[in-house]
Length: 140
Image (tube, rainbow, N blue to C red; front, side, top):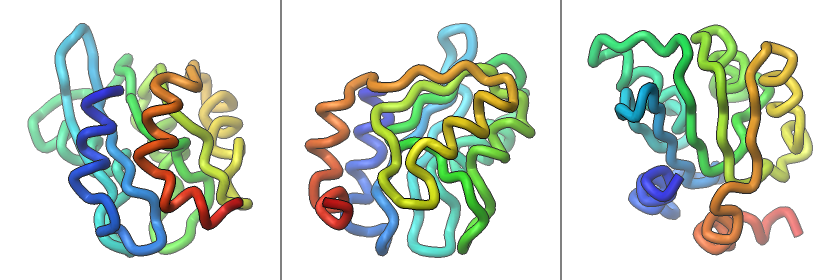
């Protein structure tokens, strides 16, 4: 999760109204892919990491995805990250904080669990809150 936080920090305040999220995908203690949220309309961190892993020839089946913020659940400017994660047969998602966006806020987690994915919340939660405090103010 610390690496995911570092990746998010690389794009702090460069993601429009989206949070600066970092993501790392791991299997058998090997990093398969890394990513971060791009400018508005570009890939979110999860999709960026998935594309990175697949570009390197890795199968994501049975992997664990670490993400600083809950994967989005709805199709807005980009497709639902939660649904994409389910489609890629990732088996475990570890996240720092829930996304307070009213269309997400637990819905991404629900979609992951419905898709058979184990979800672990709250890992490095305080570090993520500190990193994302400017973005989180918009939801107070």
